[in-house]
Length: 146
Image (cartoon, rainbow, N blue to C red; front, side, top):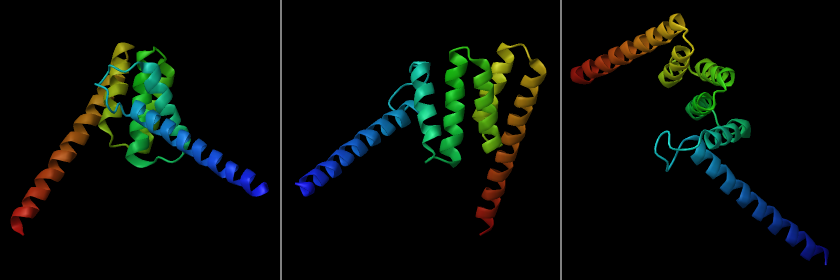
């Protein structure tokens, strides 16, 4: 009898794991707007999906940076500006070269009339684009010389 009960526990655990995996995939899709045209998803779904992705602790690097940026966009759309700023700032702390975080934070500064801060973010985007162009040009020259 115990063996059957134990087997039932294993099956129940497997079913819960599958349900959790499906939920995680749905949250991932919501956070990264997979299968949804940009800005057509309700911001609450974007926020909840990205919050789940961030809190899962299994994502890092570019995925985590994008999750903070996307959740910040959701907060911005729901007029939760301080939370949006916090997420854009966190994305920039994680990757100081991630242009979308500067863009969205700068746009939010614009809405709030903080034009000096808008200029700072736009200047940073300009520096990053120039560096990106220089690296591309360098790679092209190296490729030609080989």
